[in-house]
Amino acid sequence: MKKRKNFYQGEIYHVFNKSIANYKIFGSFDKREAFIKRLYYYNSSLIKESFSKYIEKNNDYQIDNLLIPQENSYVKFLAYCLMPDHYHLLVKVLKDNIFSKFIGDVENSFSRYLNLKHKRKGPLWQSRFKAVRIKSNEQLLHVSRYIHLNPTTSNLVKKPEDWYFSSYREYISNPKILKSILKEISIQDGESYKKFVENNIDYQRKLKMIKKLILE
Image (cartoon, rainbow, N blue to C red; front, side, top):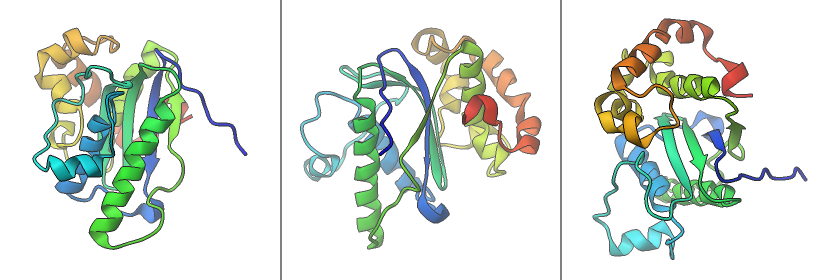
């Protein structure tokens, strides 16, 4: 059996997973919202019950900005993007050896939700999630750009800000995000980051996948 990876406080990872058989698990607004809510909900050591049980008593549950860490968070979200059949997360681990459980809780809860919604059975994910450790500031910037350009690379939208379920809008429109919250990102203003990202749109479309820094 393959030994599971340990995730330690302070480490940053590009985390991603894809649906089985390219099933459009995030093909609608409500499904994307359901996944985001689970990312937010399970990201806390204060959680005492499953999301499904909690939502039965709090069906008007709303979340704050995913990029702003909560009290007692397991991870800090640095970037994210939900595509029709997969997700990308850029996260900083805040507590040792809890990350696998956190992602497992999110994916399992979402699987139960989708299977119940569509009256289906069986696995939802292609495999266990993958996590690539970020080892430099340069790599961190390139991965964030890769994540934010996924919708344009796949020709779903012309501009990355037109894709709603991505952190890109917050990067370029909320000055506090890069200046004071996501200090791990070396570009600290929205306009400069916008230029950095959008100068690479055509290149990333042609290349399709930048594997060296992104997925390996």
